[in-house]
Length: 98
Image (cartoon, rainbow, N blue to C red; front, side):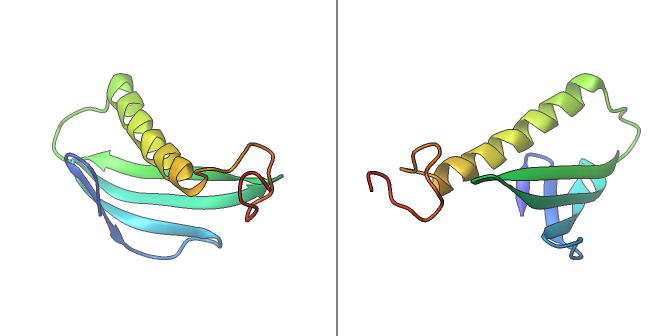
């Protein structure tokens, strides 16, 4: 799976339920883990990256922030797709307007 330019993820091992861990390759090497936590009528998405840069390129705070923002955009895009038409506070599985 390509996350963004220079970064890719491949299935690795299953993290503690309900999570998933991937091997990260490209500009960084290491692992990425995502797990979900139910909260009220929503879900909290936890993302954890444990990576090192490839080569001698140092990780600046600015680069780390840029990658964090990219990951958040992907997660929020998925959220918007999954919740399309669902009014805030409406229980999951109930179509809007009912």
